[in-house]
Amino acid sequence: MGKNWKWATTGFGLTSKTHDQIIELCGVAGLDGIEGTVPLFKGLNDSQLGAVAIKYQNAGIKIETFHLPFSLEDDITSFYETIRRRAVETCRTWMERSTILGATIGIQHPGTNRLNVDLEGIDNYMRQLEKSLKELLPAAEQLNLTLALENLPPGENGPRLGSRPEHFERFSKAFRHPNLGFVLDTGHALMSGDSDAVDEFHKVMAPYMVAYHLADNAGDRDSHLAPGHGLVDWGMVFKRAAEIGYSGCMCIETAPFAPGPNGTYSDDAWKQMVEDTEVLVVEALGSES
Image (tube, rainbow, N blue to C red):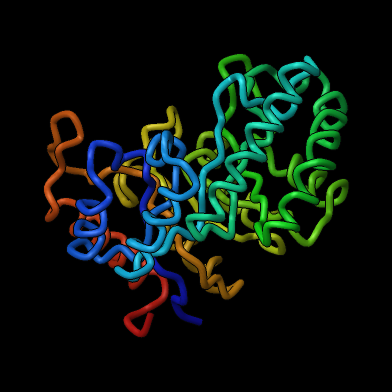
């Protein structure tokens, strides 16, 4: 049982850089890829996206995953049909654009409102999600893209859709499809309970796991601390990933744990973040990892 995955980081922390600078940073830091994001590629037409994709490919940098839009207007489980249908159309557009970049996995929030799922009724959400996935999954199949539903933190008013392991049990039974998978966000899972909650999410998601978002926190807020600087049980996370033979890019969805006014982290800080995360893997799996 060893480490078969590679490291990526989120494009959300790289928007101040040019693509050439990002490629250079990845080489210095030991990152094998980045997770594509809308802000990083917004404004580029298809031809320009293709040119950027070639640049990353020639440098050996993967854009395996792409985070699809998740603003309030991008709610594919909205109870308002006008909003839901528009969100589905936006999602489909970025699914298509992401594949130009070489993405094979689209990260999708099951919902973007933060309302209490128990009060609003999970069946109401499931009904809306079913409508949306009936359109999005055939589109994903045509694009050879896997749509990965991400677990979410609780809202201010209690649990929200996607913030409990049992929600993903329902998703897997109701919407089973070869182009549907799950992505575990460790920070979100910790906020939903504790380290045991992270493990519970992993157990439910494991048969359908296609991606990971690695982030740490104290369990009280979505701090997006670099792995090892919060309360996530990283030994458990990496052991579970090794057990299922995960071999994709794991996205470290954080900035370095280092001084960086306005996000101006040094290349050495990024490199240290990757090295520190690698140490956590060795501690979990042994030196042969």
